[in-house]
Image 1: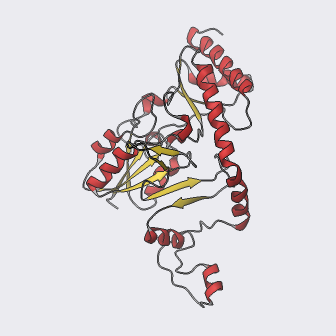
Image 2: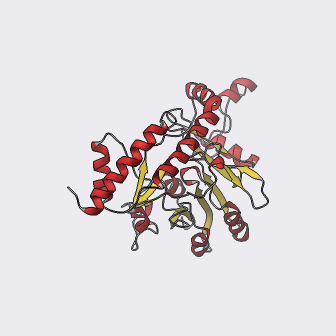
Length: 312
């Protein structure tokens, strides 16, 4: 209690909840711009106080945050950096010197999700990556009730007992999900590449649609995992979504800013509130075709024309 973690507000609630579980307060920062929906380093810096202990970043839609700026802030203020890589399996970050690093290897720990809607899925579960042996040992303990020796180690060594070193959780990854993960690993590069191709097709198709802006339009797709396809639209977004639904096109929103939910709501609106009003997520998945993309783009253009012009 009393510690603070700076977190983007344009994320799924789990990013902020992870900090809350430790007893820390969550301080929200907004996005870089309408074009770059990752967390803004300048806003992070403005929110650092003597109580700040960590910075959580989210590689939104599979595009890297401005990691060198964020890591420099963290080093200057002696802060931990947690990378939320739920959108970004096998995505990369190009450093200023031209070298490329895998997302999830730059901060103190990287957190990956294998939920059913992710690029790589086991239904539920995930993994953490870290270069710090002491942190890896702590994570192994916390995932299994804080035990000093997991069951497999006791079986291998013949140890008869264990200590409980911390208040842990039941976050164990079972064998069935591990087997599924191995199969997923064998095809994740192909699936990510297909997502990149479809995202490129969306960029081309939506360039001709008035009233639509495509975030990350100038970003290098070869480094992204292209998890979702967000756009910013003008007009009545609920009406646009309803019209697309009538045509059999499912949409969603990534995200409602976390700071606006009752459990986090403060005196001021969450930083990304205004931007989020126009957010719309279009369908994107490796089983889609370029024809599907064109159909979505045409339908979106028609829905926008009706929504902006007030046509019934």
